[in-house]
Structures are given as structure tokens and as C-alpha cells.
Image (cartoon, rainbow, N blue to C red; front, top):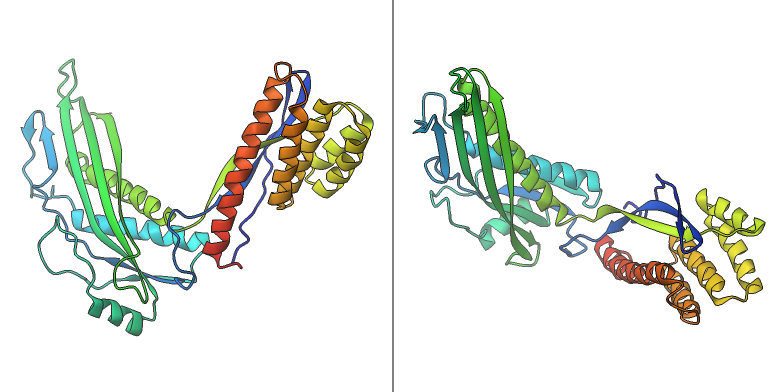
Length: 353
């Protein structure tokens, strides 16, 4: 599986704070999935367990104040929207490298007309899918529902050929995840989102009542599918980090190493310099730097210990004079504590002992 820690530097800013120069940079860190699945849940089959909502439920379209009559080529293909969500889930799962196998079950699961209801998979169907399809995890789309309001209105200055197509679409998707050996879903949840579209045009046509509405609904379905997939996969987040610069040659040398990701070399110099310093605030800054250097080398517990030492050194100074330094160190300690907890959960999710 892919390593869960990846570092990317892409910005540099020199900043003066309480007579201290700070080197700021950004890193990408991995955060755990919101849902922790059993480690064996590696072969995922995605199923459509929805019933398409009727177009006369939750869909309101008007042209110049009058309702748009369905039919005549203007009916919306609501039955296809779930496949846009499923396609996006498949893409996100595949790009995450978190699962071994991802596939889509193309057969209809339900044959009823209760479009608003949510129906769990029967134990018999689950067993059939596990045994015959060779999967151990089932991601089931239970419902995909929309409210859709479209107004095609004449321009305020009453120019007959100038119109506004004004659309708001709200969607909600409900999903369940089943795992082999568990008859009930390990999780069931709903996600909602909205999409807006407003554009002027000169000639109203079938494009405005068919292609554009379906474009809005399909994109909203993609958005919902993306959010579903990210519930089950670790994600990457860009965060800010920094270290204090020094003015003597050795501290500048260490900063140069750190700026070029040579953290072990920077750490060695900062360790040496720490032993030479006496002022608590200077020792606090170097300890903070050592904390960052250890985090960048994936030594998170050691990083937290150095950050705590930096806080202790700073407590022996006048807090009013070093308020910004104190805030930087306190926030970093909080960030490290969260990252340590997240990494424990990531290890569990990736199956690392």
C-alpha cells in the first residue's frame, strides 16, 4: 500500500515576529478516513439500490412564470444520475490506492416503486454477492433524491430575445457499507449538497430545459459521489509549518539544510547550538526547530517532546515580550497531538501493526 506520509514544499515566506525571523512552508499530510472499515475490507462492489424519484416530485420548472409541461423531449433523465455518483466513487477509490479491487454491480437490485424508502440488502443477496462475485465489501447507494427549481425569465428591460436561466438544485445521497461477516451495515449515512446556475441567453430552446438541467444534476451527482468516496479513504491536507531562523553562521547553515529538506543535517546543527545557548527564549526557538525537524522525519512522539521543551523554556521568559512565539508553539503542540492521534488511526486503517 502507499506510504501514508508525503511531504511537499511549495512556498517560502520570511516573516518578522517579535524580532524573530520565521521560515514558513507547507506540507501535505494524510488524514484518516472518517469511517474505519475492517482491515480485510479490500474488495469493494458498488451497487445501485435506489428507485428513481418521479419527475413530478420535487422538480419545479417554469418558463416566463408558467409551468413547463413534461414530455416532448423535456423530461429529465433522473434515472441516470446515480451512475454519475457511482462513476465518481469508483474514480476516487481507484486513485486512493486504498482498496485492492473496485467494481460496479450493473444488475438492478430493486424492482419496487417506493422511491422515497430505504431498503437494506437481504442476507441472502449479501451471501450471493460475497460468494459468487468474490467481494468482501458492498457499498450500496440506497437513495439519490433531488429538489430542483428552474425559472426561465424574461430580462428586466423586456427585450423579448433576452432571458435568464436561473436554477437551484439540492441533492441528498444515502449510502450503506456492508462487510463480510456482518449482516447489518457497518455504517449508513446521508450527504447533501447544492448547486446553482444562472446565465443569460438570447434564444430559449430545448438546451435550456433539457441539456442544462441535466448538466447541473449530473455535476451535483458527481459532487455527492466524491464526498461519499472520501468518507472511506484517507485524504491529503495541506498544512502550514515553520521554524525560527538564527543570525549566526551555524544557524543559517541549519536553516539552509532545512529549507532543502535535509532535516537530519539541520537537526544535528540545532542540537549542537542548543547546548551553547543560555537564554531561555533562544533555547525555546531551537527546541521548536528540533520539534519540526523530527516531525518532518516522521518521528512524531519525539517532535512532541521537543515542542513541550520549547514551551517550558518560554515559560521562563516574560510572556508579554514573546506572545507570538508562545502562540506559535502552543498551536504547534495542538497540531502535533492531533497528528499523532490521526496516525494511530491511519495505521489501523492501512493495516499496519
